Image (cartoon, rainbow, N blue to C red):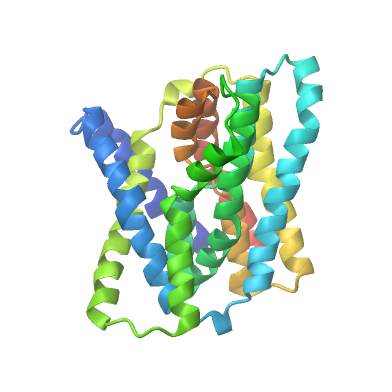
Length: 308
């Protein structure tokens, strides 16, 4: 348990530092927008390409890790859709608010997951987490865009525009490129790998700073039923399902711990950007993200330790 907490401390210190910098040294939005775009389009894709391209996937239970995460996401997504009519009747949950509940329950904060798995297991942990990313990032983007287009957008998006929104995601392309390099055995010059590795290592620290800069602690005031339900779905239900599936698939040791870590992280901060762009309830999602980030500091060690 102490080892897990020690691995989480640097992650949450970077998030706290980002929160402090946003309110002291780097107060302008332009600073953080630029950093977010740098991480999103350059640094983090470089990490994915370098990690997947060099990973020895023969030692990684690809089907077990990817299958457990993918099925867990699909089950929680189906649960959210099944609960929507009931929530609409009981608490008056409207379409835009439901999309924020949906994104908050199924998406995951990749920067936190990769930082923790890297701290715990080094390159092997990053490879395992990358397998989880390959399995669920394309599906998550398809589902999130589709749900927003159906329940929140003022005008329903055509299938073509939905597909374009998905294809613009640089994480998907980075995963595909990294896997293609790995499977094909394409010889990549060592300086290029070192270049990508340098970019990738900086992505984790800068990405966590950006997460902290986006926190609004006023969102902790009087959270409603929808916010608490989303927190429960993401921080409790998702890891329980994922760990159970991983164990059923025969995972153990580092593989099961990485599944627990990836399933128990808070939701992705870029979900807020997507909600603003497509008509979702952005203030509700901001409140959900703050609650999850704060509470994950307590729930993540429990699930990671249990899986280990």
